[in-house]
Length: 177
Image 1: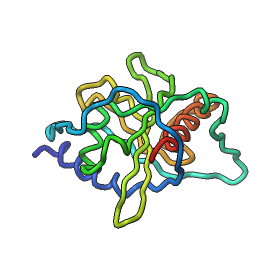
Image 2: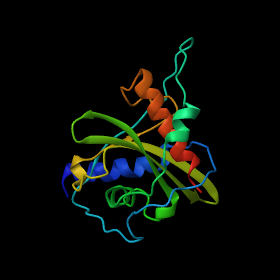
Image 3: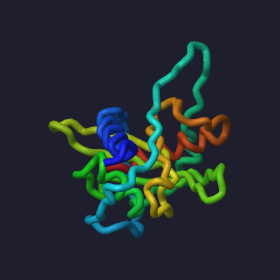
C-alpha cells in the first residue's frame, strides 16, 4: 500500500473524531441523489485539510446571514460525496447528509459546496460539516475536502464570501434530521 493511501486512511480515521457542532432541525428539499449503496475505490484518497479553531481577542467574526439562508436550498448528496463519506463514515445513511451550494467558484470548474452530516456514536448524536468541490468530480484525487469549524479557520474565505459560506453551513446543518 502506498504512503499516500496509507496516510489518507489515517487522516480519514482522524476526521471521524475531529468535529462536534450542534444545530438541528428543518425540512429537506426533495431531489435526486445516489441510491443507498455506493461502492468505494480504496486506491484513491481525496485531499483533506484539517481545521483548527483560531480566535483572537477583539476580532469580530462574521456570521451566517438569515436572508441568505432563506434563499439557499438543501439537496441530497451526490454519488461523489457519498463515495468519499463512506470511507471515514461507513455507516452513514444518505438521509443523514445535506448539501448546500455556496455559489462560490474561485477556480474554474471548482464549485464549492457545504456538506453537513450527522451520525450516532455510543448513543450520542454527532454532527460535522465540510467544504468541498467534490460534486461533479468523479476522481477522488481531484476532490478537496476541508473540515469546517465555526470560524472557518481552514479556509482563506473573507468578507462577503465568508458570510455566504457560513450561511450555507448553517443552512446545511439546519436541514439534518
